[in-house]
Length: 432
Image (tube, rainbow, N blue to C red; front, side, top):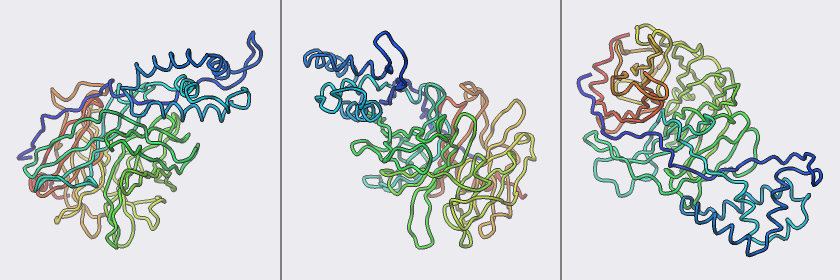
């Protein structure tokens, strides 16, 4: 590569970024000296016996410690109280006539702070931001998804916003002061799920937690793409891995504005594999994707139904030493005049992850025009140490003018940004 412009910006895991989450206390009855009751019931009964003055004093203490760290904490406490009341309220006299202060205090006992990116931050993808007002001429505002990992190694989806300038430089907007978890529109143990962003919260102040049983151990590696239908309508789609702790499944992320988000499990054989990446438009009237059906090669898939993915055609397999163990895509294909550009990752000796690319024919993406013989990005002395060493990885890049913005994770511990010129990438790719 002739020129790669590296940004000085580095995002690192930050334990100070916290969100209010439910704290689970058992609602299952057990025998105590006071009779048969659950821990949750015991706590509620004890708090109900507090006088109004005692309740307000304790609630004031909680508010002093936590309200300044969270947006509308009292409202969250009251919502949590309603959930607890629906589970155990019938067993406790007075739960339906409780005053708001007692309700908020009970809710606080069933909440906790969760540091959603204390352990790791990794695997970004990037799309054009739906809001482009007040952006300098020639610049493009972008929205970046990030995989964040907290206590219990639970993966979540969070976001950052920034501007990609015409000269290939990157500018990140400031962190949101408050983080709020997207709220399910309805209770669900299985998909599909509808999530709502808090109205007072920006997209970068929103984090998406697992909701269903299939997602219970994490939402991993969102690959975002702005999808354009044949009639010109656009929407944001993405694929991610739902991990239950034992099984994986590929699911669809869908939104028009990042206010309302739909999470829906895919169907078909390909839904049982990681790393499906959707094309940004239909190919010959059908939905299309790049996937990895054999755990090591790139496949081209088509489907009449974007929720159903089965078989495909193998188009690229491990060939060069840096990708010999396995290959995968690094996000959705990018449309160029020369063809479809697909960034790839390869795993070589010592489980070292590097990034390369392939170029596919525009009319028939089963045809490979060129591929990387050597990596475009590789772990270096300053980018090899971390939670998972010797890894560079991305889940999606963005074209703007003659530049490609490529955010990438480093050792599952930080995110950095590279800007690459389109012509340089094409010259790097060798005939297949």
